[in-house]
Image 1 (cartoon, protein in one colour):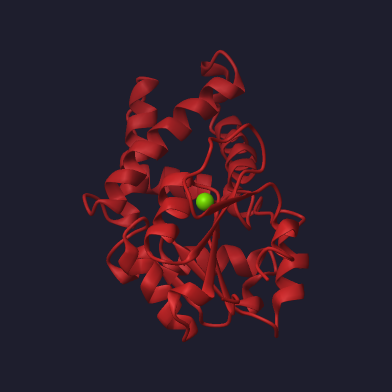
Image 2: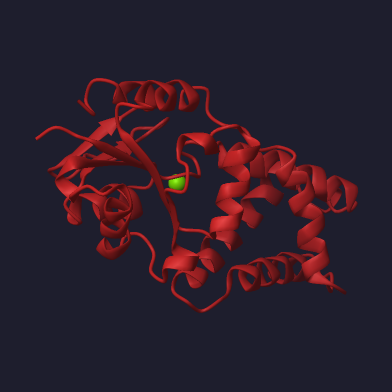
Length: 231
Ligand SMILES: [Mg+2]
């Protein structure tokens, strides 16, 4: 059955989230005069990302608000340095200024979206908040490809890999799931989640070996590979 619509993950699929955080966070630590408290910039970044992974999962599980997870991440990171945050919300906001000036799309994102525009219905299904994702897609010049078809877990009330959010994404495009492809970089949330919801799942593995995927999951190494397999 031919694919009529494509739903995308955002972070580390269309937008180079990891590079953006690396650049933005290290700039922030340098300005805050905290960078030399670490053995290396890589060690500082690894700690920040490890805390992020844990607290973001708690946000997705409904234990934190979107803003709440930012505050807790800041408090945990500074506690590791023995620093008490006078105002963790303001500290995170100063980080966000550096991060938000560093957003960049992967070079293969705009070409594939341009090729699909007018030929496929396009949308986003993301585990984040809508203003945040809309803002970063606008910054990197990709927002116009999606119109209003941006569905985020914070507003929807459940997160990938729950089939409900994938099915709501298909409904947003006005297509049944078997007519829709989903493209994302996380195996558990994106590839397995989409496959289990009945979409055609493309797992984007930009580097590294990945793992042998389950049935019904297609591995791609670049968004450019979507041209033919999305059919
Ligand atoms: Mg992602």
